[in-house]
Image 1 (cartoon, one colour):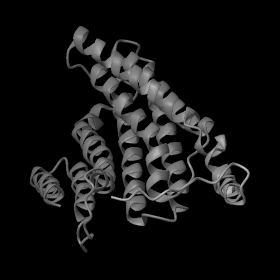
Image 2 (cartoon, rainbow, N blue to C red):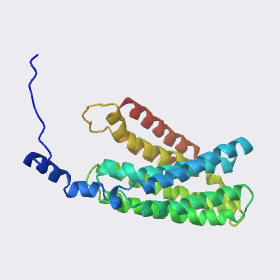
Image 3 (tube, rainbow, N blue to C red):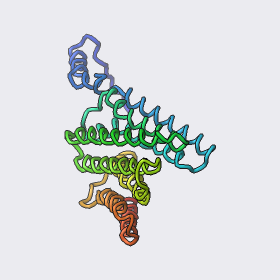
Image 4 (tube, helix red, strand yellow):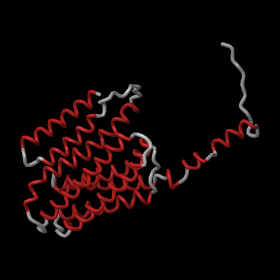
Length: 275
């Protein structure tokens, strides 16, 4: 084949100057603005989440599958979601990432609340009250921040709506968990302890699973380089996951309705795998 000669414009050429002016425009300045793109907040919260994971592993070896171990793993998952949300939500919806201080402040009461709760399960009874207050306040603050963030999103309205519902489920999880913590510490009646399965369903299905399914519907095709046209009912499974989690939690005292809710969650999982 015949080689076609070419040459790049030199640094002082008008073409090169025009290219530099394009690269130095307001969009590039916004991308490198630390108030918009600085990942320090995300990295800091993720570091705290990994510390919870390490602590959970130590507790698992020392105590086995105890409530302290379980909630150390829960702290890891929750803080990892808080950290990842600051990068994933802007990437998918077009909103700007939050300032690092905002991310750290939103994660602080959650991290401290889990520490207090774990200490309470290990014998420090006042930790039940401290953990209940911090986790309730922290979950409401994080959900409110997420709501105001996602409402302004110019893209992916369906994804944003799902995230808002899963955030509301997180608040319900934290409030019910706080009531259970107060009962375990002897600060309230023990009748609420019968709703512990509802607490687990809200946390695992309505919050964690619904968030993961909503994100997967955007990231799996991207990573698989799949070029498919979205069908009308393709995102139905992410709503079925929410329905199954919330419905099961609400009907935890009614075995038949609870089984129906879990069946809906199974159908959602099968439908999601099919798509």
